[in-house]
Length: 356
Ligand code: KG4
Ligand code: ZN
Image (cartoon, rainbow, N blue to C red; front, side, top):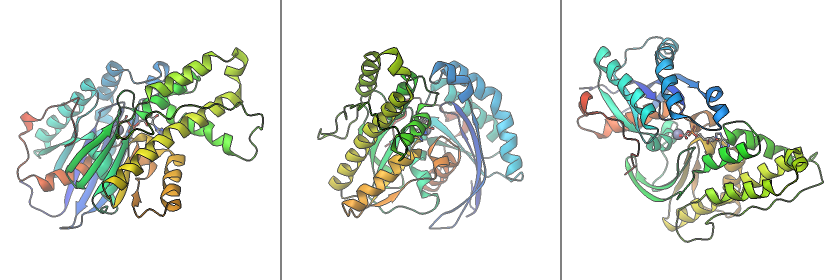
């Protein structure tokens, strides 16, 4: 049983294709203070590039191979601290990948003789926002990543209600699939963002091709999303072009700009609508897609333009994409809430875990 107010948490995150271990120090009684001692992310991008997406069996093998080295790096960087608590992502995510992390955490917990707290990956994308300051509640959280697109009402730390989610592809998945159609690298989000940025520069080519894509479900009353139609619209448009146009820089840039804008329009519109309906005091973002600078900029602009009273919080780009600092922060809040942590042997990976 941990009784002290200062504790060192080691966290493990292997839900998708990044092998992540972080060490943080959490202190303070009421308002927590967090210090990041190390944050190691071993990316598998180069391996998954040729598939245009994550290949689960390969990802599992890589996690297995990388974890010992990543652990050593994380402990060395943190100057070999005495660990009080282990936090591990148990879901949602890719089942074989989650199990590698969970089993590794169990072995380490036995070896170090410290307890483990299981962590929900979606919750950790939300709670990493609390690293600097706690938001004002109720808050609307938009979590957008390669596997998820969810709008969540956050009544307080640990009290959630899913208001809406994607009915098919996640927003990040749409970025990745469109990038693949256009012959850009994986992950598609950052690659599309780079191309899209250039169309907005003053020196951008004036011979515009004028691509117009749909904004799926933007006018529907619910808070659900759908992005597979957007990807299909890109595919049809691409197929209708001559081979010369398909390869032209101008076409690719315009398609990237319009895809990014279509996704941004839908995400902002639904989030602001939910924030108004639930009289939220803050809007908080999380997940890889929220690393997108244009999305962040346009969110701020919309709040300013409409003089909306919501506070807007988004983690640094490095903490938007998968990392284990977020797992550690979520582990801290869970440990604070629970009177008794579960037994090591009872901790399991749950690939389709829902936030509640
Ligand atoms: O949260 P994350 O790292 O992993 C999952 O939990 O899925 O999110 C990865 C996703 C990928 O689909 C990637 O294309 C997207 O986030 N992404 C971005 C950007 N950086 C990463 N999408 C748009 N703009 C970005 N700058
Ligand atoms: Zn994620």
